[in-house]
Image (tube, rainbow, N blue to C red; front, side, top):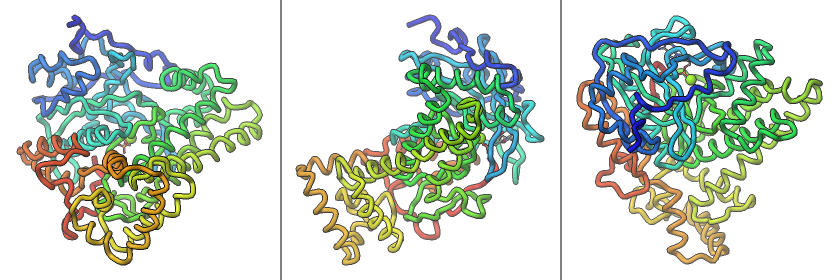
Length: 488
Ligand code: AMP
Ligand code: MG
């Protein structure tokens, strides 16, 4: 075992901290009164090459990850950024998150190690810099589920209870989430420096983002345009993956769009139970801006804001820059549609869906919506699961559609077992159903952590048959959680 296998001895890197001074503020975590380890993500620690964290005592992990005793190699800072929140430009920054630095995993990839809820920063704007236990456990649980579903996401390394109370709508137990990410660079990071007309910082961020996430493009003839194209493609793939599992991000502001292509910031997010294009769960999203079915369009809008920030780096002549950026942005719609047809096609059992399959997919979804059927379980029914949706799929309203599907599938000439394999790999049995997630979080806040750990064990195996139906059964109508909270 290497000596540097604990966070204390780890050779920290601080590449972000070498960017121009305006990109961040030095700030130390504010100590908390009685830190206690709630959970360490041992599998993630192993993957990061931090497996020796398993040998640390819970007390020591709590001291380090609460920020009470930051590792000696850390150089804590809060990142500067802006964002369009519900369409309006706002200067933000890490108001409660503190980056300790970066570490390199055994495969050579760099990861941010960030404490979320570690106290106020120069960007706190009157907020308390803290987080409540429930929302941090929600982020832990859902980011784990996303990773297990194969969807790019920031990860959760640990949750520490602070022993302090935070005041939201009521007093709640406080917590800190240790988040890891390919990076925390966002669309809003560039938006800040574009708004400040700080060309030097923009250029430095461009070089940095390319080196960190798109190293094959550093020598592109027009690096800014190349970055835009690469981010457009990654986000098109990401949103297609969300749509294919029924994920609703809930607060798709530009500060919550990571340039790495990872899903970031699990606030009022939820998964569809019944299929519903206009499903909204966030209590503050009154106009449905971030509804399930609007996510591709909103991502396109967010990428247009990214393109605007890059304009001065694309071409000194603004009309030329706009023309070139527009051309790249116009690729988002087709890239998304292609990715979506592929993903949805596999859910149906098609190994290689084609553009012409779009109508078949859309017609099937329209039937699910019309008959108010469970999204996940309808696809599981296609796979042969015996659930309530199965009865509906055999109903006359669906028969004509199923005949079209069967005819299309027979063209592919696959054996039934091969079709089954494609469907099984694309259709999870368990998703983080909101009513069950909420119950686990409520129990944890009330001092009973068992339901959280039970939920975690199921959601880490979304494709495997589970012993209980907590996350696979469609909730009763009265149980369907229609809103998640806004305050995190
Ligand atoms: P979010 O909605 O979590 O993406 O956060 C939006 C902005 O609000 C970010 O700049 C956060 O850092 C900031 N923020 C959220 N909660 C707090 C808090 N409790 N204290 C200070 N800043 C916060
Ligand atoms: Mg955010």
